[in-house]
Amino acid sequence: MTESRIHFFAKEPLVALLGNPNCGKTALFNLLTGSRQKVANYSGVTVERKEGNLTLSSGKVIRILDLPGAYSLYPRSLDERVTCDVLHGRAAGEKRPDLVLCVLNAMNLRANLRLVLAAKRLGLPCVVVLNMVDIAKRHGLLIDEQALAKELGMPVISTIGIQARGADDLKAYLANLDWRNLAGLAQASIDEGDETVIAHSEHIESDNIQVHRILKKLNLDHVIPDHFSDRLDSVLLHPIVGPIILTVLLFFIFQAVFSWAVYPMELIKLGLEYLGGLLTQFLPDNWFRSLLIDGILAGVGGVLTFLPQILILFFFILALEESGYLPRAAYLLDRLMGRAGLSGRSFIPLLSSFACAIPGIMATRSISNARDRLITILIAPMMTCSARLPVYALLISAFIPHTKLWFDLDLQGLVLFALYLAGILGAMGVAWLLKHFTSKQFKVNALMMELPSYHLPRVSNLAISLWQRAEIFLRRVGGIILLMTVALWALSSFPLPPEGATGAPIQYSIAGMLGHALSVVFAPIGFNWQISIALVPGMAAREVVVSSLATVYALSSTGADAASALVPLISSTWSLATALSLLAWFVFAPQCLSTIATVKRETGGWKIPIIMLSYLFFLAYLASFITYRIALFFGLG
Image (cartoon, rainbow, N blue to C red; front, top):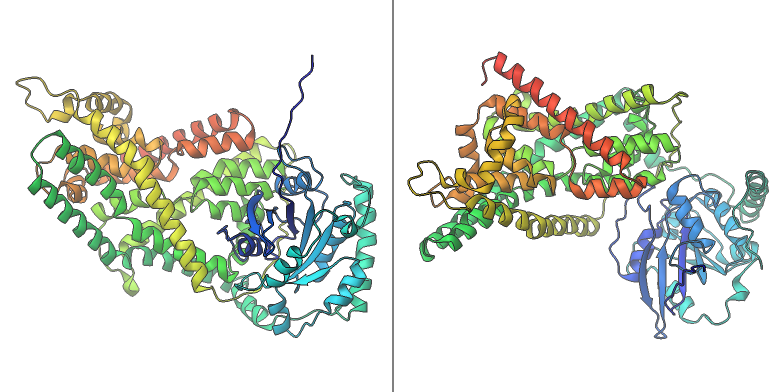
């Protein structure tokens, strides 16, 4: 008896967007479908297929697939493999596209047209979408659509993916298309399948000749200089000045995270204090009031306070993404990463990990070298994700004085910069060890990355992206953080203390007993039982550590302002050595459960997640132990 898998496909026509990285494909997808997928001015942002629906003026609904960018249909990385599998009809649970829209960057036809010629060999109906024509016109590049369509043997339609009505012509064309008879748009009757190495080499040569002929015939075979970008690059990519500017820029960002967030954080704290006062005034003193004030308000409110700092950090990251500076940063860091045994190709996944390790790990699909990809996955959790920021901000606010140093530099911002730098250096050190002690054939792969033109970030894109970040953070606050906070409150409140007990009630609870048991393990690195118990729910999400500490300490407090009293509480009960040890712990702390699940999915088993958890726990404990002992030696205990 044999088993066969049966797939049921949606009846709507399936249209795939195919194009080189950074050709504006995802912006066009958002414009067609009304989606808000991430768009940035560099390649490698889309690493998995995205789907949306487009309702045409005729009333017909079609499905749109945004495929990962590819330079050819000879896949060298996992994201290009996804694109090829969909186009060849091998993607699990997905039918072969009915129509392929080959999206071209009008400013870079020489590279983009090769993919169009490869798509023609698929035997699928194809239409060329000439995107970014507005930028091309600004640079004096006028493209004759009819002549290009004649040379390619397929329709050519111009679009501007970033304008609200920039895809109207494309929508009108799709509305008038005879979807029951698309064979006329196919250029080959048979799919040639995956290219062999020999066939790929032959196609490269023949495609280059054909592209050169087409561009020459259309008078497009000349290079359009980008004077503005060239002048900026002469400074920003200077071998000496460039790294200095990058360091100063990053330094300024971390200064702003603390300096600019003071007033909005104070407003949130005042709001929490006011709400806590109202609840204390109007609710009777029972377990329900304790749950609201000591559990939810103290825990969730303690994390919510740090929202302004997270938004300020992402504002700068998004602005750099939009401007086109980030690929330049990858170029500048390529030499440093090469010494650690990585190529600059790892920069984008590692940079994405500063927001969250999950998209960073998924972005490693664009790395073609399997060993580079695996090492990048292993070190990605050491990049300081946004979930660490509330923990850092809490400890820095409690133990580092808000003083100005030379040139009006903020000491707290300087410490935050040092923590981010420690994570980066730690990751580079681990990468160097893994490269040199696990590879028999050590080889650094050269960085090949397309540098986009500079442009000013669009305010609307920044606002939408920041709102999305705030939504993600608030969903976590209202979801996993709220759930863990309530669970910890219950564990910290029950069972009730026995009659005649003299200690705080929490010490007789389940959480109290568990914390005291764990403190045996963590005492050598200076952690008390309250910190030990907070680390357990912190495995669900790192910010939960802040809410857990707030809940544990709030249950020990009798004041009405317990929800906002965490900073003075820990600053009066912890030593500086303990605070520094906890900061060192979180530089290397084992990752949250969602990231571990992502690593398992991306590596296809539990071996790599277990290795990652083990070495991160060892590094975190070692760093905390060394930090704590050195601090004690200098009398900071």
